[in-house]
Image 1: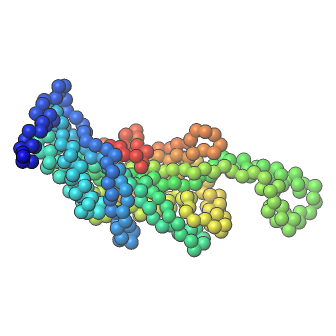
Image 2 (image 1 turned 90 degrees about the horizontal axis):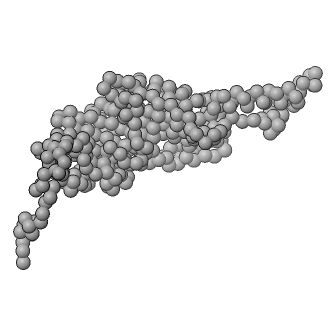
Image 3 (image 1 turned 120 degrees about the horizontal axis):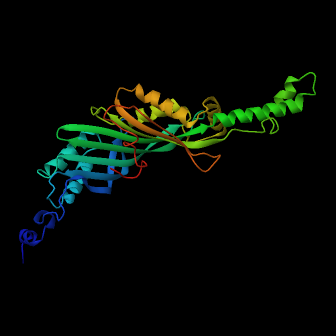
Length: 327
């Protein structure tokens, strides 16, 4: 019987033995949609587990080499995420192992980890809590000794159209004039009751579920990713994040928040831009606010960036729909 060493020696390795039929360097080569469990620290310091889709790339600097060692990338991923939680240090060590295992072939490596971060969120007024899911993307790039760290995030919120609100108010004014113009003395109690009827509020502005997709280049000095802090930063700037558990008192409070925070997509983008510009942990960012209109079938969109020289240009740093693996 042949030993395993003899069998391995006899197995062909075309990637190493053959030269590329067409020469050329490759920017990135590797795998995506790799299914792996990951552990992430929550805001209480506890480790939570999530299912991730992972992208693992290295470059190919030699134009004549046929291929890379993809199995090595997978084994390094499996070992790293099995032994350690997902942290900036984990990503950096992982990328170093990619390059060490491809010495002479590659001098740049990339890993992207897409997963759902699920946390408990308190209701606006009632004592209830509920689960919220946030698609998150962690991206690490190592070039030589230079490590770059990026984070992608999606936050859902509600947006009420300022134009629609003004038009609704005009209709309510017209109806009030129609119902009370003939009354020489307007009775407070009568008006108060009228405001509580469907005739009194005969028009409402249109609102829609909206999404802020962000990609941020972070200072690579964190021990753990500031996921909750950045989610809170974005939600606090918008003021109308979607809710989990909703009783009537919560729904009423949500209606009040929407009425006090009328937003075009431009307003939402500027609110986020102002908040992220103040955060010294964020070196650069790209964000897209999409209002999934209820008035018409097309969406209203705004895109904002920090505009750092050499950073994201014309949306080049955009996430390719967070929650779906992309490099």
